[in-house]
Image (cartoon, rainbow, N blue to C red; front, top):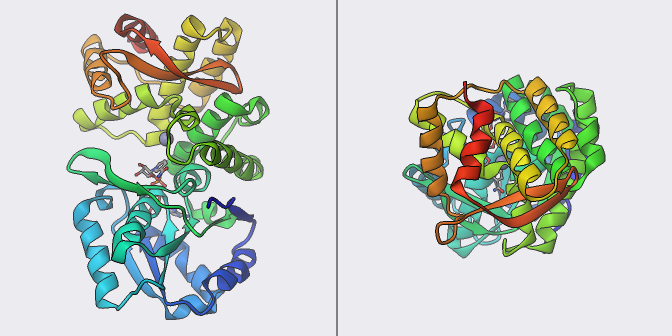
Length: 344
Ligand SMILES: NC(=O)c1ccc[n+]([C@@H]2O[C@H](COP(=O)([O-])OP(=O)(O)OC[C@H]3O[C@@H](n4cnc5c(N)ncnc54)[C@H](O)[C@@H]3O)[C@@H](O)[C@H]2O)c1
Ligand SMILES: [Zn+2]
């Protein structure tokens, strides 16, 4: 059963709730080096039951979302006698909630876990919804599960140590939530100013929760969350191929622009709305210039998207700001046309 996330301003407000949930259970914290340094000390200090917990720390970043690290985590649980009644506490960004959540699904056929997200992206997206996964080779999220966390506890205080690039990455998902479901949220997100973002995190998380609740196994409405992601993932793959770095959210911001352009052509988004979307996203994120060769390569990546059906490109678009629409069929030439916005 899906439970809404709980939100706290300060760590000292989160820890009593965490203490209550953990109770006297045998606990295992899964985290990464950065989070262990910046977030864990205050969390453990305020939560007595966690002071006895084993801490399993992995390297930060996507490199840890793999089968090898997962096996290491599972072996550590086994060596430390974790059992079916044990509780896994994932403290970190989306890599940790994905890795630890999947570990919790398969360890001894399933143990309970809670997420304490520490990145903006995890608070508003990754830690919510019970989708967990690791990568298989270079294929993202190929092995995973649907396994709901017992609780998701978000605390704004953690964002104070989050690097700016990560903040920008998470905000792209909030902007997406606004575009697909909440016009007012969209219009309030205009800068990376922390106090403004703070007031909108819970609202953004609720949008994801509501969509997930209506479709826990991703059969229909959950596809709304894919807006910006078909082209966004192709941009991420393109950068990976060029051995250049781009954050997930930055690539999604570009995807949001191009897929909004397609929305003008296909689903009746007004040109004025598109201009507003384009202008806002270009003021928040650097929009790269791509060569014709880059664009061809990005289209190649799109052809391999797992959401395609029988040679058709299936996209989630928007009808207007705040109203997403799923399963729109797009032709390749229309996608190429949208990429012209980036042709430098
Ligand atoms: N399961 C889902 O539904 C879902 C949804 C969206 C994204 N994801 C996954 O989430 C991952 C991306 O999540 P992410 O952006 O949080 O990545 P991440 O977990 O790698 O965190 C980003 C970086 O920020 C650091 N960090 C996190 N919190 C910090 C803090 N409070 N202070 C200082 N540093 C901190 C981390 O150590 C890391 O270096 C991807 O693997 C993606 O596939 C999953
Ligand atoms: Zn995303």
